[in-house]
Image: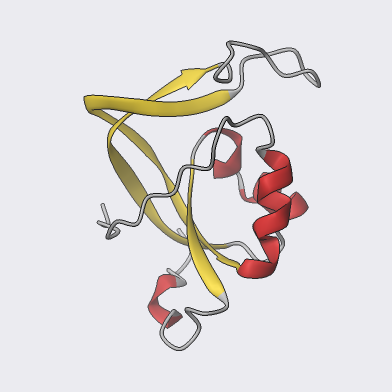
Length: 114
């Protein structure tokens, strides 16, 4: 894997944020389509959540007619993904990509590297 870019976060916190990705946003080429600043940080595990497919209303993607990867709280389960370090200028593109999400889910937790 590429070198972790989380090492150089000091002094850039005001311009950057960490984004936990799962599903199609695991793929570098996919995340860079709308978020060119994304830099791989680490592999991560989100405790007490479960991966599912379909949005909060159970709908499929209108573009490719398949299930949409989503996560929900589920005590005892875990979701594996990656953490990307991104510039805050990419927040609006993430919001557009996830317009179908019922509400923004932000977890302010420490990252535990695996």
